[in-house]
Amino acid sequence: MIRKLGKVGVAAVEELGQLTLFTVQSLFALAGQRYRAEKLIRAVYEIGVRCVPIILIVGLFTGLVLGLQLYYVLSRFSSETLLGQAVSLTTILEIGPVFTAIMVVGQAGSALSAELGIQRNAEQIDALHTMRIRSLGFLVSPRLWAALICFPILTAFFDWVAIFGGHLTGVELLGVDGGAYWNRLYDEITFTHVRDGFIKAFTFGFLTTAVCSFNGYFTHKLSDVPGARGVSQTTTRAVVYSSIVILAADYLITSFLIQT
Amino acid sequence: MSASQLLIQSLSKRFGDQIVLDAIDLEIPLGKHTTLIGRSGVGKSVFLKCIAGLLEPDAGTIALDDAVTPVPHCSYLFQQNALFDSMTVFDNVAMPLREKEKISRKDLEDRVFTMLEQLDLQDAAHKYQAEISGGMQKRVALARALITKPEIILFDEPTTGLDPERKFSVFEMIRQYRQQFGFTVIMVSHDVPEVFKISDHVAWLDQGKIAYWGTSESLLSDPPSGLTSFINPQLA
Image 1 (spheres, rainbow over the protein chains, first blue to last red):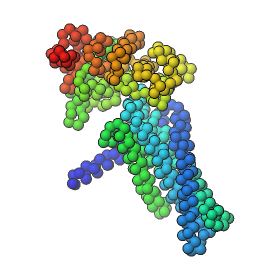
Image 2 (image 1 turned 120 degrees about the vertical axis):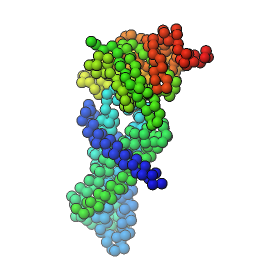
Image 3 (image 1 turned 60 degrees about the horizontal axis):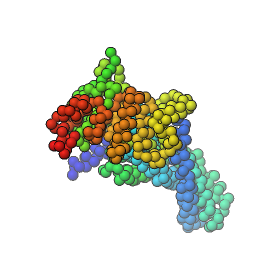
Image 4 (image 1 turned 90 degrees about the horizontal axis):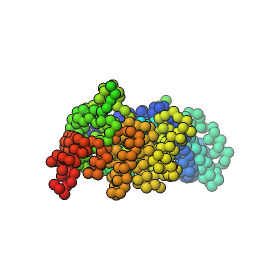
């Protein structure tokens, strides 16, 4: 039993080391590539632009629900005018970065992992090696940099849509004063809040793209079975691990930021 | 002295407890066609991948016999072609040039279209992998391998899954282009005895060792006893 636990522990540490090495190598591999801008723009389109509709929908419904829930909590204390502040702070600090990251992982992260896994199985990654093209620079690095660009922008977009959703429920549906909603928001939200939200967005983007790429790139080593089932296994693994990473990192960052 | 052979010395590779390549020594003549034969799972592709640098050998060296010239760049033709299915034929063939060589757009197009014409693929330039036949896919993979003018091309079972007629045409294509471009062929194949017709030399890999090495003619005229059953099971 202890031996088995030890083996699992050692394997986990080994994988964490490989992931770190993979991420660092990938991050700098873009430097050796030709047509960097072209690759980066394509990756920004895949991770950023294609995720806009889902962010719009999820952001809107999240704001609508937040407006509704917080209105009933605040109305118990006759503090409905604080709704704008409550919705915006909750969104900017917590829900915006976390939901955006989870949504992007669901859409772009899973696609990235599956694509790399299929490319591994189809020997396309080996083919790049035989053509002397660095596969990390060609396939992974542009995605990693694109995530650093897209996650904060998508998070900001989510925040605005959710705050607008809160306005729809609170002001348009439940009759909270519109001036109070927006004034409270502008008065209470500071640069520090926005900065903290962006710190989370950057971190989540970086970590989840690394986790998804790693699982796809090494699908032949990380899955129990070869072929399509192996890719399906590592894609699921990528999404599950990314979600755990988002929530764990959120807790750690929040603890750190609250203390500073 | 210019190099005339690729020297493989004490090449070893194991996966876990299983020894796949057991201190293999082999001298592969440059400019010739050498075919590696052997039973399934004996390690032929592993051997080829070690030469291509896709697998790190546990021990041994791969070098040219003049001991000065570095091992030339090897192109690799994968069993399933390994074409990028979301790219057109043109983009697949252009990829090594576009990514590795500083070349103008016009020169790149000229070189790619010349190569496509030489392999009779000009009409398929803007098609995707899914829109062309298996034989054409093989030629596209060959065009991609040839575009950087490699000195050595490694073929990993290039006729897998093809009917006898297509097998013959793939072998004929390899023979014809080797004559035309002058590259060295190192091929793994199961298609015995057909493959002997286009091979200059044959190596038989068995139990991690090179059990036979010789010219195709000598192999056909006087096959060693162990190899007879492999070449023609009905006669064994």
